[in-house]
Amino acid sequence: MDIGLKILLIICASCFECRAEDTVTQSTGDVIAFKEESVTLGCTYSTTNTAPDLFWYIQYPNGFPKHMLTRSTYGNKNTVTEFKERFDAHVDKTSSSVPLTIQKVQLSDSAVYYCALRPTVMMKYSPPLQKH
Image (cartoon, rainbow, N blue to C red; front, side, top):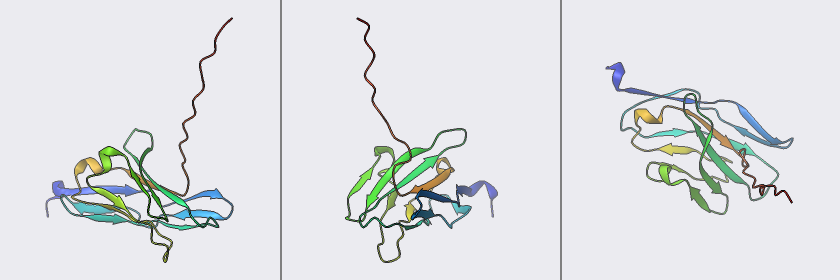
């Protein structure tokens, strides 16, 4: 087996808490896949919210977490353009999970992947100050 053909996806296997009663758990750990394979990264959640929004983020080496996609329990989808072709997730209300599937894995997919219940990166606009 040629080690050069393997692709390592590092998955953060920790729990992110939004509120005391909201938790997200990623149990996948490190994932090794061959180029062009498909992989699925696990994420389960627990919340008192009856219609939670779930988010996947990617963090490349030496980079910041970047929002990839959002999924709602009502089926609403929002995916950042650069991830639309090969990345997808769906909310399974029965198992309280939102697994991320990556089609045709590439070496450039090597990163840390995070699952969250609510946005963890917030943008806020502040108008410029004017001197009078």
